[in-house]
Length: 391
Image 1 (cartoon, rainbow, N blue to C red):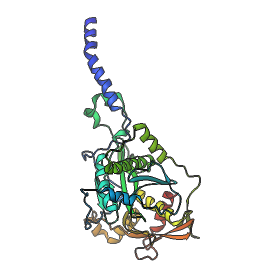
Image 2: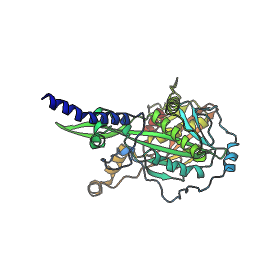
Image 3: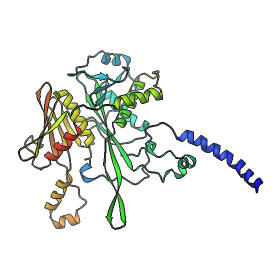
């Protein structure tokens, strides 16, 4: 019996050592590990979170084959025309710099959007993500929803069995990123990256029958900071292949510094009429800073931006409210709903207009697509959501 036990221990030793090796490999410090595979169950988005497909009639810039150093230097010599003090979080790179204004973060690139667009396109594949839609006419890219496998529990069972048992693990969360490129006043490019999440929750329908549904989750500032940091490094590496990459410790420190911000007071305030209905948003910032703040909020809310004009201070967006959708279906009649229930209701257009009041104050209004008062009745709800995101 003792001989049998000793033999078993000897035979199990290589397996144990192999497991330890697997543990050291698996328990990494990576913060993101997305999958490009669509083998898992598809994510069903609530009606009021649906995005309208973007137009494909605009051509997408192709990747340039040659980049001239003289072009880069010419852009680097341009002066920045920001209306308010802006702090640089990372050391100045050859091309890309990370900027921060309070809790607003973005990348400033000393190159025109036509050169930056294809680099940002390529970037998403390097972090395991694919693009669901892109529209060069408004400078927006949006990734597919994906699971961050780095959030899975790093236990001994998963580390030992690896991919054999990996398919049974799920975080119950999905992430999506949007990148928006804007031409700066100096001819360069400002890149804004925002994060959205969906969380799977258990819902009891009747009795013992439980099912799961996906609901909007919180925005993660650290994930936004991670993507902004990686994207800036990717852009700098594109034009300076000999640049020394930051160590893991330096990278983590940069991300934490970029994500850390706690406002001392609310920046925006929801304004209401005598009937208690939201009428506008008052932002205690000048137009340029308010524009950046509202633009980031629109991205995080998942609105489809069809047009924008900074000089005129407006965004043209589409948003499908769940209550509005049901009202439209009820007006279609019984038989039409029976035979064409799957026919989508068109998302209405709205104008988000920023009105400069002073050098330190801006007011945000919600209008219909014709620039007049909204007729759908959804504007107060959008203003409320927008106010929460711009605080």
